[in-house]
Image (cartoon, rainbow, N blue to C red; front, side, top):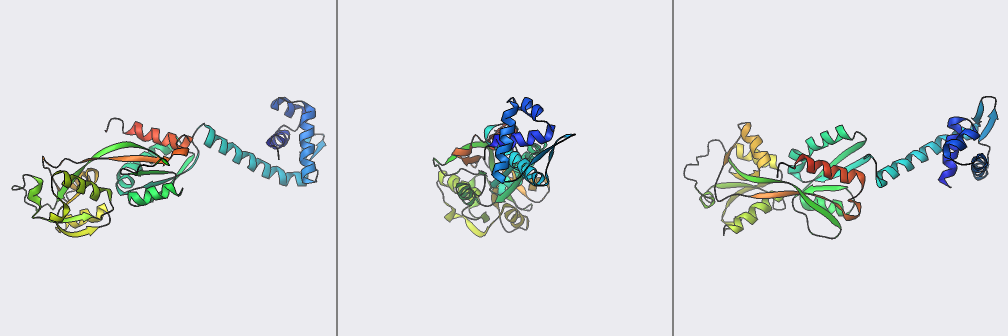
Length: 296
């Protein structure tokens, strides 16, 4: 069915006049008449009737008119979503742990204040899982550590952060001068597929060591679980500086600063290459970049 037929029907009922509908749609009055007739022939029923108060709907026309308005609204939303205008619709975000807890909540709140017609949902897992979700179209965007390079994805770094070594409050650090001095200390680490663990392993490798030299007494599945283990005195660990600073400010742990352990990593925004220009996705990326332009 031609959308112009539906638009003519909607406008006719709004203004209750063939002449006025034609004027507002910039077509001739016979053109409006033909479009209404085409709809009536299609549905095999009378849609409108002329009365002293202007054009009115028949009982069958009332049913069809309600659906026509819904169809035209859906079409309008699709055009806005894919062809420009204010971002609208739902954005499904996949995120690894640190972005989901420390970066995205404030960004989403501020974005919603600017674009209230966008709704959000978030799925959280390790970076590999999140990128797989994106490739399988289960999420619209991904905020993770460095993603794999593939022509399917459009990725760009959005914010950088440091990793921090944290220890129990009673930990004695006077004899700790460099990272190698920590190999005699018990460690609690994130699981092996986490961004934090990967960044730690890469850094240790550049120092000429490996995690095999570390006394690893536990591997846990979340940043908060690792911090809680350190707070309980089970060992030391490396976590996001966002998480370390919050835990230190709360008096739960302390941060150990070493000159030879300076780890900076990026978090990335990723979406499917074919979707990078969709208004809601490009607007969200721009919003993140504006929020962190002075952070990096």
